[in-house]
Length: 633
Image (tube, rainbow, N blue to C red; front, side, top):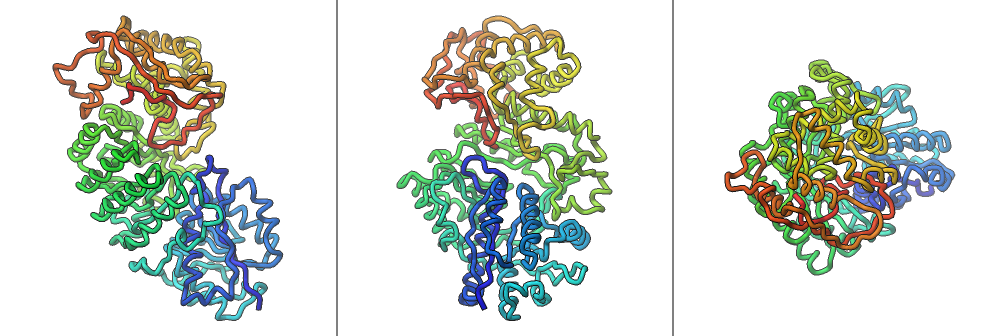
């Protein structure tokens, strides 16, 4: 018999530059790398394994046309961002090669009994689904095809009853084999990087994910990570991890992203980081390191962040929060880092000149517009950048349980996002969403950040109170605030225009020049707004200084030459002093107000010239719009 083709389909949305992670190439590489070595490589003669090559959805037709004209085994790994693309291609495969075996897996494929049946009913072109880890499941499935002496035309006759961890279609019914236990011996899994699964394309790329362990001891209801592995953490060997770092260096990978649930929780993680730093210093790669950090303030985590920062391999330190509201935390069974520990870590990061970052979720049961506003204000007060995510109900997360949804009266929209709960309506959610977008524009991206800190510290105007009122008034009185109305419409976007809804991603085109070519007109409108709506008249040289400084760090088309802007008061020194404080809630008595400071300068170093104001807010942890300067906070 001729070898049966195995097609690992690494499909995804059109990537942002050379970031192929949305195509799920890594898990597919793990599957094929293990299958090739399974039982001393006995599958190699029976199967022709295709290459794992990231393919954007814009090339699906030509990819389909290039397939061999005979049935094969098609593998798909589905995540929220590529699931629909996978299903569209699977459907096309079944239409063109009806005898093919379509096997799916990944976090977006339901594991529970009833949702699994509904999934198979919605997707009649799917034959089998692997539950949990898929390496051994796939290898045993291919082994069964070989043992049952099936050829490419007989794949539909496969009997998978002896393969644990499978849900499959048989005679119009959906059947299940017993669950497969977790593999705690990860040494049995070869690395897809060092075994060459990606060598044909993976060089000079932006990002690759690396695993040092698997498992998560937490069980937050919005997450399927802990729900899938709520037990001990299984480790890959140090030899494998360091060999993958060497691969990244050799192939000139810009960013290593650790996809562990809690990087920094193990003592050896600091050794891994030090190995990366040594490689970077010797070879220049990698140039950035990303990770989801541990949920506790262990000493090695602080050392990891500090050493990465000192080596220039990270610009921010992540501290996981989601929300500060105790009711919401109870509802999602989330145990946050203690507030005292959180503040201690923030103080450490500020002393070390490291920018702290926290993720915040929108749409959790118990949340309200008021709790959303308080959370954003908390991050603002502590000078922490909030990375915002809309809550997606993942099929295997506890939040997908019908009993849980009924308890908290959760409704889900067509995109799989929470749209209402017992604590907020659809209209409330829309208001919260807008507030989060306004926070991103004005604070994270810097359009009014320095002015808002000044106005809060010296004039008692809470930043999020201003944003909430600005959104409310601009919506009903566009005539009084025409520039604000255009900012809200064109930059925040109607219907979440231009960006992924789950990441609250802002995007706009060159027409944003109405704001950036003449920031002064918008600033004057904001001053008038504050006087009318908040009863605070802001004027004088201190206000002029902070507004001029804020405008100086916004993008401008044309030259990227260094620029020095003289201001009547030392705004850079003012924010330099604030930068060293743990928060802006308790300003020391000896803190010098801006109006009492001597003249100063805002210095913007040379930077890449802009040919357009077009922008996509793709950098989750940093405000990529703001120019570097001596002002940064």
